[in-house]
Image 1 (cartoon, one colour):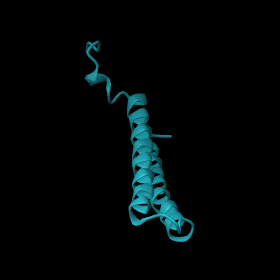
Image 2 (image 1 turned 180 degrees about the vertical axis):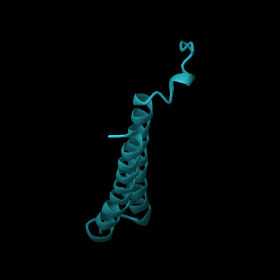
Image 3 (image 1 turned 90 degrees about the vertical axis):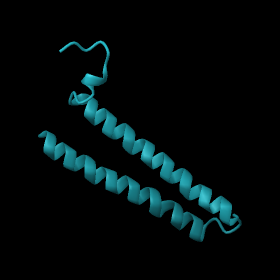
Image 4 (image 1 turned 180 degrees about the horizontal axis):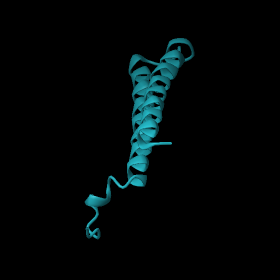
Length: 79
């Protein structure tokens, strides 16, 4: 797979992860968390989004690291 096609797969995964991270807690809050206060419902959605953004960030950092995009940040790297 080329870098461009892998980046496209990564972009699609990013959209999929963020969509699931937004839809799943909204469904949970709307139908299953009937005893939660409004604040607790907001916290459920925010925690889900924070975890999703962290997962996406790790995915892109690993992708960039494998392609050598982060070598220039290293102090021990001598061109």
